[in-house]
Image (tube, rainbow, N blue to C red; front, side):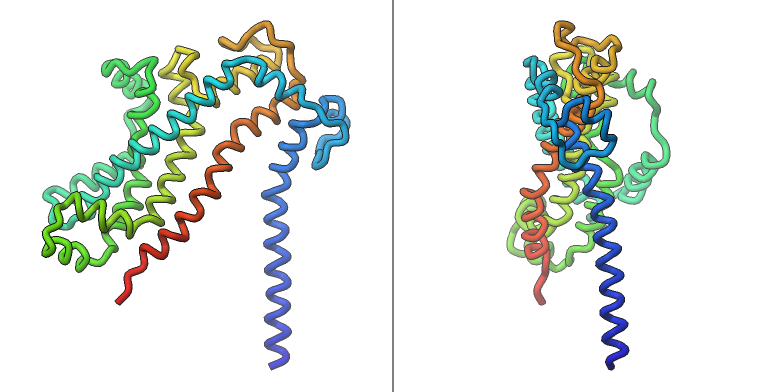
Length: 290
């Protein structure tokens, strides 16, 4: 009995030690980036790894926020993230619910076409030609429509809907509920864990949207924050950089890169604590009592 207790305590000690080490390996880079963005370039060059700066400086942030362009790009990213997540979730939920219905005609063929897109894609040039032929170049639609549905996220939602008890849908039909009523009043409330998770996936993807904006959007007034921050990094490196104001004082190259990471990362990190409560609430709503 004592040997088992000792073995259990030894396992817990090793387990907690490894978890703490892994947690530090994950958190310390974020702390370093945040601290380095607030330090002077001289201290950064002297100390390659900084956790607590001794010479605080806001030079990098002054350069980033010295123009109204940064605020416009932040608003663009917020709009793209919110609108894109709503569009993607609406289309994904409707399609996943349809594919989860076993009585859907051609269900297997449609599912095969969805899985096919995970392995093969049309490529950059055909996609660009389609976007151009639809008249979506230099518009927000070019950043929203081509990536509206992610096949992997769709499959997760479809499997979650398919695992819900069939008796719930049958009981709702007996009570006279329509298909949309069943979806929005029963299926979605019971699927909150999956919906909250997929919404977070879509939101992060739209916030980090860079490639589509770089290819399809030439109008700098519609650039998301990621594209503008790239221009700022290019400017800080002494290269020619897009539509960024050329009158800006050249920032310290190393610290502004850290500040760019903070500006691009912190807003989406602040969203997670608000979504986390919906995870827990969704687990309770998703439980089916016998």
